[in-house]
Every structure is written in C-alpha cells, then in structure tokens.
Length: 385
Image (spheres, rainbow, N blue to C red):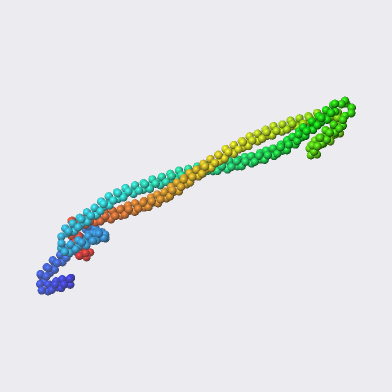
C-alpha cells in the first residue's frame, strides 16, 4: 500500500510538480495528525482500561462483539442493549445468590446448632451414664462382698450345727449307756434285796447266836444265785453266802442306800440329759434362725445384685449409645461445617467474579458512551476487526 502511494507521489511530481508537492504536503500533514491522534488515544486511561478488560474472558468477548459491530458499520445500540441485559442478568444472579446464601447460611446455622446441641447432650449423657455405672459397680462390689460374707457365716453356722448335733448324739449315747447300767444295777438291787430281807426275817426269828435253820437261808441264797452269772449281783450273792445272818441287816441297809443313791443319780442324769437336750435344741434353733435369716438376706442380696447388674448394663448401653451419638454428631458437624465453608467460599468467589464482570460491563458502557474513538482505535490496533 505504501509503495503504491510512493509511486503515485513520484508520478505526480514528475507531471505536476507544484500540484503534487502541495498534495504531498497535505497527505503528510494528514498522516501526522492521524499518528498524533492515535498516540493521543493510546495514552488515554480508557485505552489502558480496555487492555485490562481484554485480559478477562468476558471482556474479550465483549470487545470482539463491539469489533464485529464496528466492522459492519452498524450501530452500537445492540451492543448497549446486550450489555444492559448481561449486566441485569449478572445482577439478578447475584441477588439470587445472596438470597440463596441467606437461606443456606440460616440452614447451616441451624444444622450446626443442632449438631452442637447433640454433641452437648451426648457428652452429658456419657457423663451421667458413666457416673451411674461407676456407682452401680461400687454397689455390685458391696453386694458381692456381703453375699460372700453371708455364705461364709452360713457355712460356719452349718459347721457348728453339725458339730453340736454330733456332740448331742454322742452325749445321748453316753447317757443311754450310763443310765442303762445304773438301771440294771437298780433292777438287781430290787431283785436281791427282797431275798436278803427273807434271809434276815428267818434270822430274826431266832435269838442272836442261836441255831438258824440253814435250809431256809440256803434256799434264799440259791434263789439269788439263779439270777445268773452275767447279772452284777452274782458277786453280791457270793459275798452274802459267806456272811453271818446277823451281818445281813447291815448289808441290806448299805445296799438300799446304794440303790437309792443310784436312783438319784439316774434322776440327776435324766434331768441333766433333758436340760442338755433343751439347751442344745435352743442353740440349734438359734443357729437355724440365724442361718434362715442369713439365707433370706443372702437371697435378697443376690436379687438386688442381679437387679444392680441389669441397671449397670443399662447404663453401660447408655454410655455406648451416647458415645456412638457423640461420634456421629461430631462427624456430622465436621462434614456440615466443611460443606458450609465450601459453599461460602464458592459464594465469595462467584460474587467476586460477578462483581468483576459487572464492573467490566460498566467500564465498557462508560467508555463506549464517552470514548468511542478510543474503542475504535483499540479495536484497530489489536486486530479485532
């Protein structure tokens, strides 16, 4: 293009030197003015603003749209309308985003408060359940100790009961043995004494030292001997047979005294045995009552122990459930908080981007309205046509 202009100038100078020189000077002046104006437009702050706008994807598209309109020598009113619609759309989206943010922010606050309340309640539930479980475990230990102690006491009382019964049986056996022997002796005396009285009666019919009918005495002694060798009075019979009739009275008196003494001993033994039996029965009854009382208390403690264990297990389950609820609420709180933060971050990023886009549109609108020549120059220089 420049070469053609140069050729034309040279041709003009050769054919019409004066006219061509004047024409050349006019073109040179016009080119200078254009260059000066171009530099002036590029120095305009709006030109730098357009460069910034072009670096943004939306700004680049807007400038390309303006370039198409300028290239077609069409009015920029359509571009203005497009920019107004685009700005209105962005502002509408921002209003919707603000409303959505308010709703989501309110919901996030409610959700986080709910999670916080669940965490607080679960912590209180854990503390209460663990406190009660601890007290119940202490009660379980006390019940177990009391049950073991009562079982030990029952065992001790049972051993005493067995010992007393063994002693009572042995004492009763000894009593039976003693009284049987004494009763046999009394029975023997009851048999021998009448015979001895018979001997004495025979002797008493005669004067002292006179002849006694030995046949009558011998007959009484023979009857005594018939009692048998196993009877304790056999020795008495043998002894009596050697005595003088006058000594029989003394023997009778002594034997009656022994018999009466044995009867008294039997009576004393029987009274002592009865008292011993009563005392033993009293002690055994007391032991029985104590064992019964301990058994009832032990049974009551065992029932209370089982009930306490059940209650402890309930508190343990409460604690486990509360821990599970705490973990669920804690995790839910973390996840929800992260979601809310991510949403807020996205909202802020979108808001910043919309504000930037709206600012670009406003800047373009202002530049188009006031500096259309700057826009045209910028489009030409950046080959946007």
